[in-house]
Image 1 (spheres, helix red, strand yellow):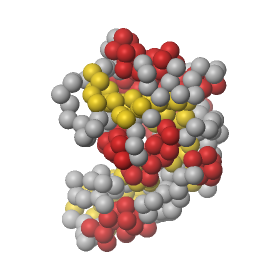
Image 2 (cartoon, one colour):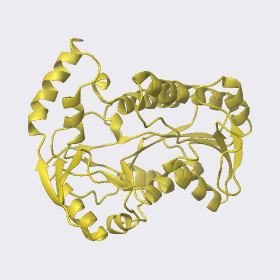
Image 3 (cartoon, one colour):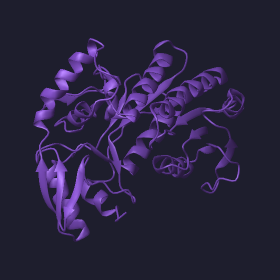
Image 4 (cartoon, helix red, strand yellow):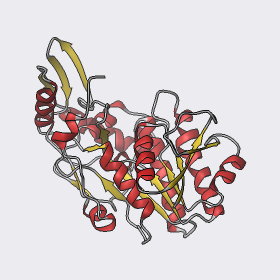
Length: 320
């Protein structure tokens, strides 16, 4: 299997690269510089998602699969996120379709879904966020990129598999809480209540799902949610994390209940085109959801199940 991979030097992309090689794939990595350090056996293909189409088209020619892991995650304007995450994805989809690749694997995120009431279960076919302009730049851009991937799939232009992971952690990437701040000594302010669920997924579990999606020869019409089924309550997770690190943490929980009402008001105004882009209360309400994610379709369609448990996953992190 010949695979063209974007984001090979990133946190998730490197794990995907190594697993593809381990399972016998031949990997070409899209990099901006030819001298970029890559795992042994990976071929460098100089190209840029924001550059001319020609280099990407040349890279995609002759490939069996394109795996798109690259994304702009950092600071910057909404325009910076649009250029890489939206326009870059659209460009890569176009060249992959033109090259006639067998499958395009698009790594998305659960952030494309809308805010849910407490206790809700999010399924793969749930609708997109109804107010994308109120979300942060990353979520906004991934929603639009995901829409392009779905459009190519639904119009029969390309066989697209869409993988939507939760909060990726492990192997050196620490995660405390979505919103938190150290106050003094072991005391930390933690956004959200004790019972808020944290949709974690270990990096190796995501990489396994992505590689399975790339190798599968059967259709994958449903989005593939990749969240560890033992998503913990926030208080249980923080307790496990502190124990694994041998450190004391005293959480001071700051519930976001008030933001739910505020978020509903902001969303209503956004539908009437009254509210400008971006809303902190709406983003906080989304981040404090007490929801679960249905991974049954992922298990059925890919034969996927997590190989890394929460306890073992926490043990693979280290202080950052």
